[in-house]
Image 1 (cartoon, helix red, strand yellow):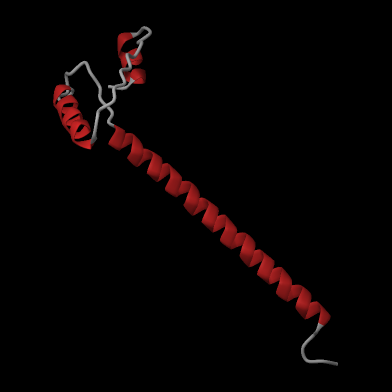
Image 2: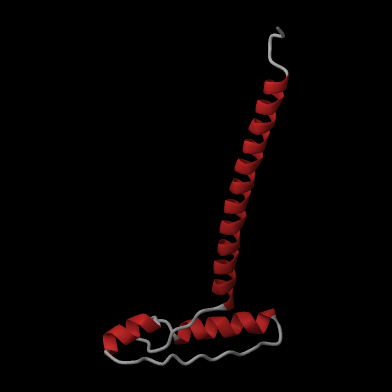
Length: 98
C-alpha cells in the first residue's frame, strides 16, 4: 500500500517507516530480496517492499525516455538545419541558370 493510500484510508497522517540495509554480495542480496518479498506478500500485509532491482528498472526506463526524446529533438534540429542549408544554397545558385 502506498503512503497516499494509507493517508486517505486512515483519514490522518501516515508516517512511512524506511529501512535500508546492505548485503555482502549479490547472492546475499538475492536471498534477502526473496525473504522480504515473501514477508510482504499478501494483500493484507501491513508492510510494503520495493527492491533495488525495481528501482534500477524504473531508473533505466526513465533514462531511456530522456534518451529517446533527446534523440528525436536532435534529429528534428538536424533536419531543420539541412533544409535551411539547401534553401540558402538554392537562393544563391538558382536552377536552371538564367
